[in-house]
Amino acid sequence: MAELSTLARPYAKAAFEYAHEESALNPWLDELRLIAAVVAEPAVEDLLADPALTTQAQAEAFLALLGDDLGDSRRRFVHVLAENRRLGLAPQILAQFAQFKAQREQSVEVEMVSAFEVPDAVRERIAQALGQRLEREVTVTTDVDSSLIGGILIRAGDLVIDGSVRGRLNKLAEALTN
Image (cartoon, rainbow, N blue to C red; front, side, top):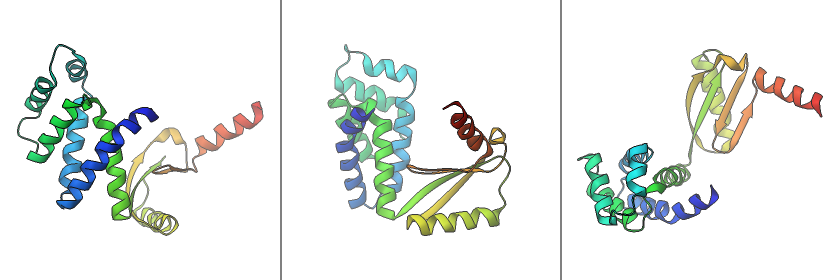
């Protein structure tokens, strides 16, 4: 998928720079999420793959699906993507835009998955420790997955800390089979 990321990078960077200049990072991020969600629909994938449609027709059909939910600059962005036959890259553009935004804001979103509900005090201590280690502001979302058996799994961008019982059992099984 590195190729798709490479193709998406100039669009994500241009969108980010424009949104930053306009002080509209959050509206852009929200609307890029909407665009990426619509692109992921199977019927829309078929629409985008139809060679009989002109790029203008693709853009208009796509924008008709979104209704009035997009701002003018995002509508123009959809037209640029359609003209270059890059609407299918919306999920990759969204991911890169979100990374640029997090880097700019010196923040990181952390997903914490545990076998049981994590008390607020523990979650705050973990967030504080991660914030110091990563030198960024940390936003934590939590989820419960009983298949972990015990412990915790933390994902912060590319960093994964697997302190779950399931993860340790998997490592043990792998060590025994080697």
